[in-house]
Length: 152
Image (cartoon, rainbow, N blue to C red):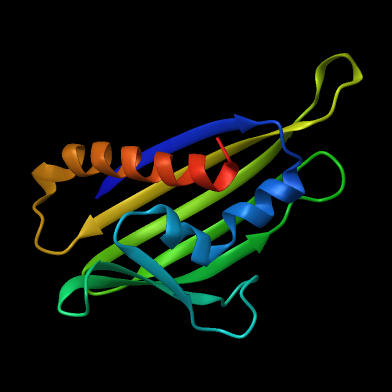
């Protein structure tokens, strides 16, 4: 299984960072040739299901269905927000975890946030010896998506 981790610190409050990284359609808009469809009425909680469709048209591509299995937004005080996702597809399996930490501002300035995105990914038909390459590509692709979501 390919594993990678992305970390960013941004000058945004944790609640705003949380809102941005749990906006599932926005993820699809940030990844080339991908669109995301939320399949459940409430798009923000445990049990939320969505599918990322990557490809060119309906014939050349694959679906990446996912479900939120943990959804703990950051509180009003210091703390951590955690969102866990499992990938349920035939072509893509694995999990992702988003963590949002409050970073105190210096000299009484506004707080910032630290985001940690950890992903474990397995693509059907790709041998395990390709995991380092898959991790490098995933890290680069999802880092661009995260930067776009955060407005970096």
